[in-house]
Length: 288
Ligand code: UTP
Image (tube, rainbow, N blue to C red; front, side, top):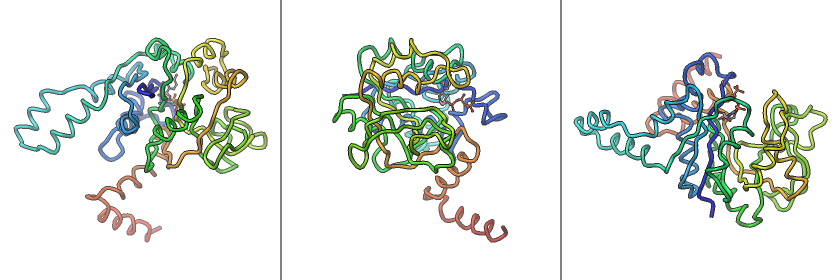
């Protein structure tokens, strides 16, 4: 059983400046809930009990968010707002959360490498801290199910438009079933006419401990960073790797337009906002 997850959350978030100059992009709220809380919730809903967050400079508010705040709790208790009190208790008790700091931002591969002692000899899930996936069955659960079946590394992928493949890590391979692909190649941000498919890596992985020795052998790649995709490509020469075509909708919050779309979609799903917000949007659209 997979009980551990890593959430990389140390990145600069340059695509979301200036908001991310002094606050983590993973703490940007979708309505009233920080992005990383949705991510932790997905992990917990998938049976994960132990989470290591890869933290770094300027990211302390993530730790505070999942910590206990006695003063705030007692203030809420005085106000006798039980629902809000229960929400606060829920956040601090979601999982067993640990932190390690990535001192230099050398890329996602390097961030994962920081988890080597924590994960030891066990397979583990990776959930990018700036990516929310909305789905009926939590995506990490979908991937754990695929891992249980094949006992090999599983990468979440989603179909993206052909003209956007150059923004993503893309996998190519042969279909094992409707939802599973046996990966034969993997390339980070390929040129549009050289991409092996339009299956884009979607910010969720089940990795096995061999990834750490592969990361040790991985030279700096795109952006002069240690890329996880490059390490996976090394492993692909030695072992089979599966991709799961996820059932769900992915939101990359590190991208401003996606952030706006997510806020609107999530607001329309919230009982207390759905009707008045829809009215407001209709008015706006009329004026376009
Ligand atoms: P991104 O690829 O979005 O990189 O990282 P970034 O640096 O945060 O953002 P931009 O491109 O500058 O806007 C995906 C996830 O991996 C983490 C990020 O915090 C994010 O949650 N990450 C990235 C690390 O933990 N360490 C790194 O060195 C890079």
